Length: 458
Image (spheres, rainbow, N blue to C red):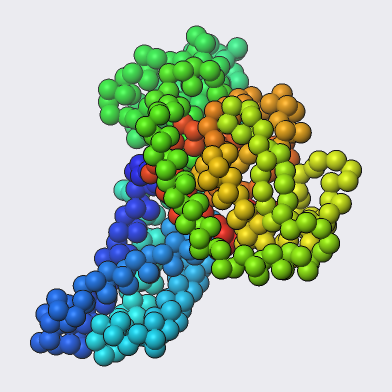
């Protein structure tokens, strides 16, 4: 896997993206050479042809990203890949048609975009078919043995079987862990078997839940020196899922880990970016403010802005501001989490929540310093003591400023139950561990997609 902005991406996904960038550029370049003929050099170098082709590459990759074509775990069937690919080409065609209509000079040369799109349709469909065939070959899959038989080992097996983009094939799954009381040599026998000709493993994932006196160190060292990669299950799960699983997480994971370092210089840079982003957002939204205020006023009786106490950095309370999306008596019976299709939400409020318009006043909280632009979402003080008691390490999310958006928001969504709050914390802990300015910028970029696709709102 390749690490970018402290997030791990499967190598084959990066290769897929780079190859498609070359294909897009190649199709429009060939179309230019065919239609421009001897004037190709002039078109490319003196009429901004190279820049226009580069913009076409970026547009195509953005549309593909928008339709999850680089996130195969979100796509259940192979036919859906081709359907989304055709949607990408259709949206690209309509978008380019509009651009050329308004700005005729944006065309590379006469009919180049049309011919290039025709080439691109055939090339991308053929490439995706070839790519699916290539990644299915044994030579391009890593053979993995999961050492263990408990719930953690089963979780690793299930994730690897569902994440085809990881390029790992399960060739063995230890069932000897529960027989240790009857067969003390079970671990050693199973690991020694990996060195034989039956498995030919490339990687061993150690998912043994109780390792005291049972970890076959001698056999694992032999495999390691023979070129087999030995990896702990928690490390693999963190890379594949982008979260720190609370099951099996110990204080030593925080003490000895390379992450969880809140550097003053890093916080100053993040604070500066948050302030500039919030200020820019408020200036862009300012012309639309009167229309939103009027819509909220007409939608239902009550105040325009909604004020609510939240828990911020260091456990300190602050007041968060939103546009009101619920009835005025929404919490007459006490504080409660929002639910899907919440009857307390007004019709306009549902639209504002889906588009995140109700969150815009929180940009003022960012400017004030109550929040950062990126960070764990602030929780209500009515729920924090209970969540801290039920979920281990929950208070760690208060070591940094809460955020308007965050890693849990772009990768998971809204949490309205104890189990969902627990899983959200796992994403928040990953963010706190790997927190950098680059990761913040990546989350901001992915937030745009989350808003456009209307994911995660309640």
